[in-house]
Each structure stands twice: as structure tokens, then as C-alpha cells.
Image 1 (spheres, rainbow, N blue to C red):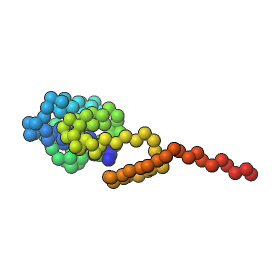
Image 2: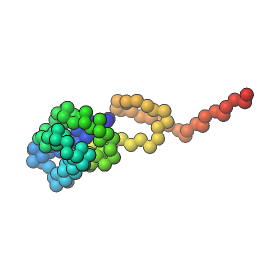
Image 3: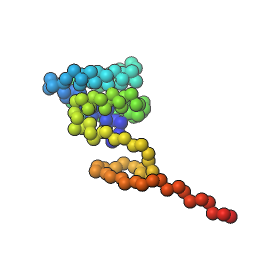
Image 4: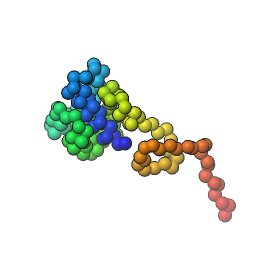
Length: 134
């Protein structure tokens, strides 16, 4: 799942919790923290700020309003923003947060987009064969 999907899911979860008045102080703080991180990233971009101020609760609406800007600006790869999005999603929608809790320590040839469930069983790395004597 991409950083864009994580950010928009977190924004929608935070907005949805606020709309239903079920937002705890942790959700409110995490929502404000993510918006602050995005505001810091985009500065005074009026288009982005208007989208962030909107009271949207559907991920597709956030994706349509912010997706291109998140990708073009590199915000969807920023560790601070992704961390804020993970904290918000964990507080507002724990089941959805599990879908985005992916850590890759090493990549030994697994490349591409994978659909869940995916299991990799890897043993120790095999060193490459030495070059043939010529």
C-alpha cells in the first residue's frame, strides 16, 4: 500500500471520528498532528489547505483532492508525515492500521506490488558464485 493510501485513509478515519463525535483526545491530537505536518510540507498552498479544511470522511475524496500533490511533492514518502498518518490511523481505526503496518528490513529479490495474504520464507542469503577462471 502506498504512502498516499496511508495518508488519505488516516485523514478519512480522523475526519470520520470527528464527525461522529467518537474522537478521543488521542485521535484529535493525531489528526491535528497530521494536518500540521502536511501544512508544514505544503506551506501556504491554498489548494491543499482548502482540501485539508474540508470535512471529508471518504478516502476517495481525500485521494482526489490530495493524491497528485502528495505524490508530486514527495510528501507521500516523508517519514514524518507517514509516521503521523500511522499514529492517527492506529488511534482512529485500529483494524485499518493493521493493513498499513508493513515493515521491510531487507529485500532479497521480492519486487512489485503484492496482494494480501503474502508470506515469504527466506533462509540465509546465498552468496553469488565466484567468477569463472579465464
